[in-house]
Amino acid sequence: MTVATAFAGMRDVGIEAVTPVVFTAGCPECRGRFQLGAAAFMLAIGGSERTTFYSFTCPECEVAVRKPAGERIVELLVGGGVRVLRLTGA
Ligand SMILES: [Zn+2]
Image (cartoon, rainbow, N blue to C red):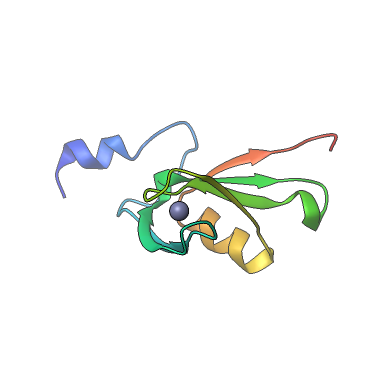
């Protein structure tokens, strides 16, 4: 790891995974399965399970995929450095 990549990982959140984390995701539209880096995902945490979900854009068919995120998935994505959007007042 170079100094440049070390500093590139330091953003406003204080602590972040240094190595890129890759998740395997499936698209319900084209049924494709692919590997995406943490930056490709967005996690929204709402007040209930119904408003807690993760989303990504399918690299195959470019559809916006949104899937419910249970506790374990939230932990996994947050641990992998996925952007988190906290939905307040939902
Ligand atoms: Zn697709």
